[in-house]
Image 1 (cartoon, helix red, strand yellow):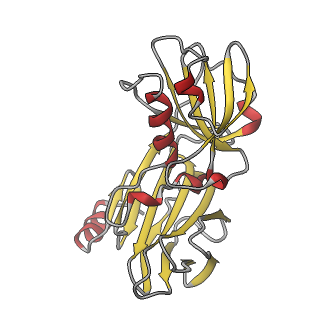
Image 2 (image 1 turned 135 degrees about the vertical axis):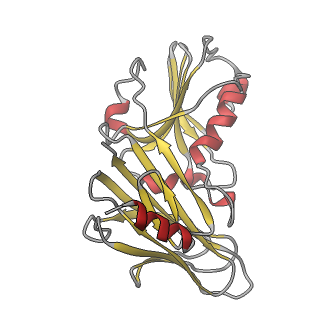
Length: 267
């Protein structure tokens, strides 16, 4: 299906190729791909049942759990032991309902994660803005937590605890700065295994944005509150070209952003 002629024609018409994905009429926010890697030696089996999408690092030095700078990163410390800390951490630019969880182990592990039942699309960071490359909230929080222990030279890795067989996540976003709809088209390869498709929606200011899939409104938010939810495989069928868009209902009162997260395994 994705032969060289097809790819060439799509690229010539303004589309783009991301890995083996075909994105036609690409969005005004550059897509992002996350490689998922298992943290093999992490001493935290509880995450198998609690965590969903996560970002983690393993430092070269032990972590001082008694550091006030580290503990001040938490909004709530839910568990304190001699070997680890667990709690909720605020995401800069977002309210308490958007907090993430953090696990910090004295052996040098920092894991920032959303809960198992949270849609993967919650990782979208709207503040990355229209016309930019997509960033994640998890990366933003990890930067702050790692910085509190003077850890700046690290390579972050992602892992999805709910889908241990998944090895990739694709994040695609679309923004709209005034009244109307902006959209892109995407076609999922039928050679991959898909574990989750989820949407994200957010506005800055007064617009009430809508997330639109194939001409149908999937969700609408109010009061600039971010929202996320799941899509079924029937809604985003592989081997079929789909239109994904975001609608802004105001002319002058803020931007809107819609995101699509696909969790999958590429052979």
